[in-house]
Image (cartoon, rainbow, N blue to C red; front, side, top):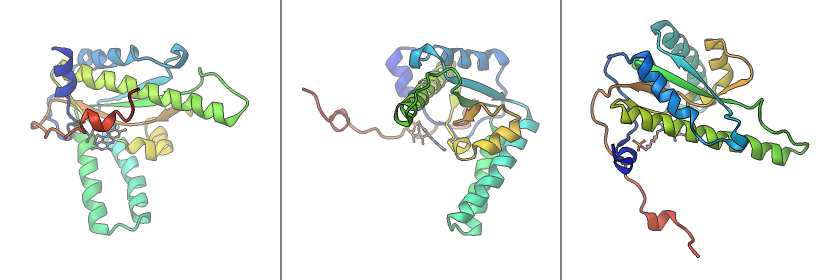
Length: 200
Ligand SMILES: Cc1cc2nc3c(=O)[nH]c(=O)nc-3n(C[C@H](O)[C@H](O)[C@H](O)COP(=O)(O)O)c2cc1C
């Protein structure tokens, strides 16, 4: 696929067909992540793959319980919480495959001052975004679809416990993969004139 067609054709998909993906298809997506740029070339990301129904349910149930508490704390009414909760559970459990990108900070440089340490961590997050985008494009190039769920970022400890992950892994997102149930709408983009704010 021509590269701009590939970039412009990718969409966030939120409903998938039940058709499973093969291990090779998922590995092709992960392989693309491996080639992302990273600070000092340290590759501060690790990936957890979830394909079994039991693990999907365990993850969805654990995250859902935390999310329900957070929504209630925000003052949302019970009916809204239940609707949002059920939609999210369905999205996680029905995705043929899930990739959980985690930050892994152990190989990064360390600094005595918090400002530079925070910048180092920010670089790792920026780099994880590059790795995820590589995955989204690799999935699209193979003819299947992906999404991006931020939920794990808001309940990292819950995700770690549900998937028995090491404390050194910091869950950042959940990337559902599969064949799309239907063609999603194309989201509008701001024009370049608005995005480029200076050009000297
Ligand atoms: C950091 C990040 C977090 C996101 N979190 C969510 C999310 O929690 N749920 C969701 O449905 N989409 C999420 N998205 C997807 C965006 O809504 C989507 O990329 C945007 O609306 C543009 O649509 P497109 O990806 O189809 O072009 C997220 C995207 C990014 C980059």
